[in-house]
Length: 269
Length: 279
Image (cartoon, rainbow over all chains, first blue to last red):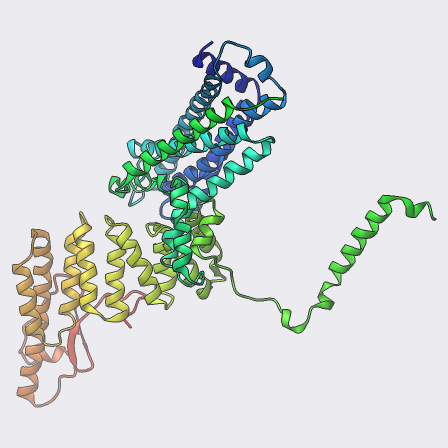
């Protein structure tokens, strides 16, 4: 048995369980949110629909991902299925990496499906009202979604690490969402604190303390490059995007390696 | 009876009953200092970013929807709330089109010219391709502040960004300066200089019409001066110029706005739109 076989089996496990229901729910959530937002879009309904659609995507897909990690890791430990799966001639690292690959494929497919339908919906909204600044549903949108995929990759690796470490499945949910909240917001909060001096006493110290997070967490907020699609301007792409992408990929690699290392040393009762 | 009080459900009912009773009579316990407040809550942008899961775009969208849906009531704007809400959205996403457009409509035209101007300035910086925010800024500087140089600066930025409206913006920038000059001869000289320097044929054609219009005014004022010198009395009606053969006919304005005789002197007629009268 090799990694690909493990991935294939993991995909089958997910398809047999709540996958279709959760995936469908994620899709509906994104399309409904975008459609409702377009009604309040004013002078830019297509932009607001795409904007809110991407925001919803960035909320529902981490949830989808965490539930799948719970299915593939936590439930397996809980129900002691590992007693069968680990008896195959298979290294523990292949057991983990195979599952991660299955999750990457599945989440990637869902991301592509939702983005495709969202762009069709936004195109329809755009036909009703011609905006002065149109959205771009071509390469800029797909590039923005590729950056969302990087964000999800980090969350996936973290969720797998927590699933291997934790004894309860709910810790995976709480830990991943907490990490997501901090990693996505700290850089934006740092920037906004520069213009909101009155918000906290001694803002300089507060900013310095918050800045330490930059050495501990990847800057997932910087991966949000949707403005290139919202305003069809590639020059709105952050100049240091290569650094951000590199940082994210290395952080994900680190988390994955840590997960494999921890799983290799995991003692099962 | 004793058995009844051994039932846990009885204690549950007593507990919830007491809770409900206290809630219903809570108003009697409130002192005079706890009167309800009437101001609207606007959360600062860093806190909003955290509340929306680090998604400043979502925060900007929902706050804009909120302010556009609730900022007006019965035709009156909630100015103090809107001032803060528009500022917060501008910090979250300065490019947000609905925010700058509504801020211009509700804040600037509602009397908060400086605050509306700040939001338009942020939008001009963020939307570096869009001609509308600098045009609105330029117009507001001219209309509200009478700051011609500042108005011209923003109109030039708008012209540099515009594809089809560049000539109109430059024409407007020249016109607002010319109209401030009381002496029509000096204004005419300035207009002719601008005509010579015009970068496109379309702008040159627009300025040609303005030159003819201004020349018409100069003819009328010259005729008035001659009439008053010859008769020794002030001109009371334009028709007197025709009657005394000082003028054969009134000059035609190629911009079709014409001239008016008011308060004893000729001046150019302006377009008047209800509610947008010059301050």
